[in-house]
Image (cartoon, rainbow, N blue to C red):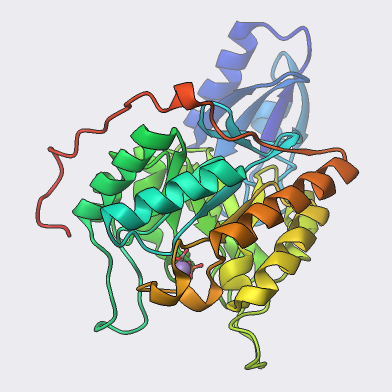
Length: 362
Ligand code: PEP
Ligand code: MN
């Protein structure tokens, strides 16, 4: 439930509404906005009796949020949430940042080559997993802590923002020391304790849609993060499991306008996992930007044939550079603009201390 205040409501009016909500046994979230001030009622799993607050001084209107997700919905917040993961790298506004890099961090030479290549081509952020969720326990699991150190080095060298995955709660704290944005992978979309943990950590989160999750389930998962007080969530469409063996997944581009209608959170597209096939990545990345995606995340490897994971869907650097050129044109055609890569001055030696978290990981 949202309690919308009148324009002439005083701070004391807002305070009284908050107090009443707490007395009713719920949590009150004051939401000052450009258009209006509202107070959100958090903690209900059904319709709340609004009679106690509706008559209070300064109250203009009580809105019952009809969706099962509350804080994530556009009813709760009509204007877009813009998630800024690093200076100049924002999702949900006019600019469309490109996140690119290998599936996994494999070595210093590999991640630095990838970072320099994607930055030169126009990416604003570097992706690369240090902790990898692999279907087989015998497949490469990532370099762990060493991988995070290498990502930190790549950021210092290139200024690129870092997007990297956390697999569990303990790892999330370690990842948070380096990442500008913590990725929660498709397989973990419904790992509710991990979602709560990244909600409490408070860093921006890239939440991927599960491979068999509905859009409502994706939004409910995001609600777990917002319920902990972290509104910095970027959603990601990365393809659904389908019956067709010619592609790895079926990239659901309909999810982009659907989510944008239902939620104020930004949504990006991942055409790499969304297709699983290198020559399908470029067309679907173009289509995602045309469909209004607030960003794209693309796997690029300096030597895809030798990649330790997802080589078959990774672009060669030259293919990626060509794609970025095309995305500039497509973004401009719909009144948007690709985010510029960070200026060289952005490579300022921001160094994360990796000393404090558990050394048992990785
Ligand atoms: C990845 O980004 O490399 C990854 C494992 O993605 P997903 O969780 O979408 O499968
Ligand atoms: Mn991958």
